[in-house]
Image (cartoon, rainbow, N blue to C red; front, side, top):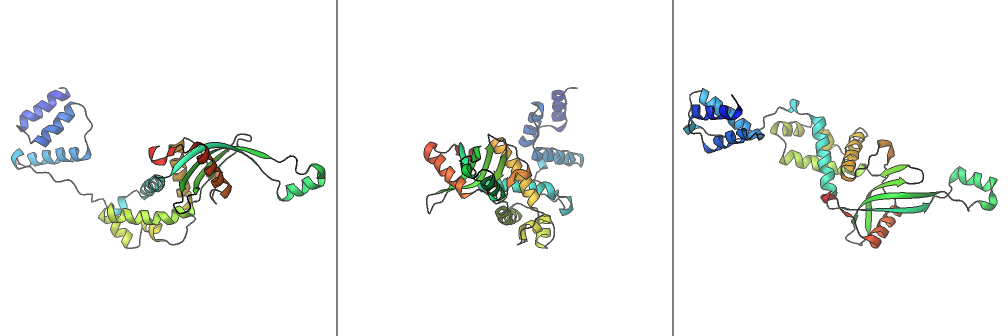
Length: 268
């Protein structure tokens, strides 16, 4: 017996079903994927009939999430919340792409060796970088200056790449995001665990100190988020954790002045 015949058999056995149940059976006949609510409704309806009920006295109330706290996959939950946080954090930021060549001055021991070995030409040959940039920025409403929040730099001459990103501020801001999740979306069991000062979410949401063990998770999720947005892959070792430089913010303002912006993060 094929699916349509089976559904018609169910209909004939049950009689004229409520409109919602009939809609679910029609979805099944069309091969559509049922939502969790539809599946729950069918399961409850079947149990209702098996226990002697009829279609006339059937009523459905959505199932409340009663998941126990020890069943929560906190590793996945924290990663998902971090990803959502980055999306919300940067949704109104713009991005620009451009290329800049810059001189890299000799510093420290290299400068001393250069002065000793070739004093006459000490400043003639300076190493250069030709960087292809992706810059994520926002305009300061007070001063009207565009400042960088994220910069990826790919040196076309050496093939070296660096991602300038400051993770500390996100550890602190994420506390507020966790608290909002607890108050507005978390199940009661998760809320109870949080407010009892126990569990991973409390550790992320209420700890005032920057915890070095949080950093790898922040960086891992951020790298995935950046790749999803821009298609550029970086490793944790490529990250310059002090964030973008003032010179890079100057470059950003030059790019915007010359060519405008490429777009907004919310549209990626």
